[in-house]
Length: 237
Image (tube, rainbow, N blue to C red):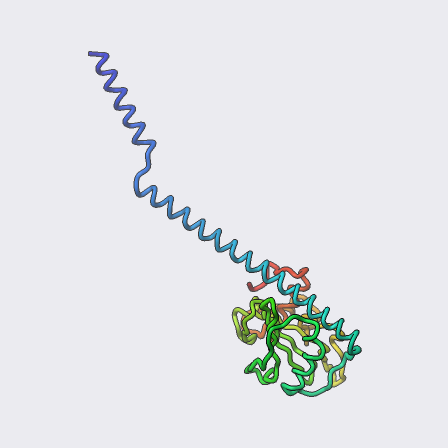
């Protein structure tokens, strides 16, 4: 009798142990939900990093290539730093690009950008073989160049995506403190710094050109250059 009771007790203990070691359907569903959320966050993080790395690589490559084109142009055409002091027509912009850039770059097509901004309405848009796109225009302050690393034209003014879709650059850009003409940049194409006061914080906080919400975001390219051509943590990506 004692033996039967002992066997019965052992079976009950065994059944209880099995019940304790298993998972209910609710527990399994909760675990799967958590795994799904973590996986989704990880994939989003990795995707953003891949896009950021691609952006950094293409921007640095474009910067190097277009300045190499400028150097090759100087060898052939001679170095002319200061641009004429007036707004170029579309044909004048096109002539400048065809003389100084296109012979030394691999491109597919070029056309009028149809930029709605009145200062860039005569700009030339050039589509490169690698899919990049850039816009070039000369006005009375010098030349502006907008680079589109993903190959699609975007407005830079009041555009939330501008910090990763449009990089503003300049060539032979002038500033005029106290009505005196002064060259801000000379013989190469560089990130846009027109009216920058030289303070790093101004690259973000400048009310007109700062790289932040509600501004034109023209200083974003300079921030990346100053960070070793890498997107810094503070950058509005």
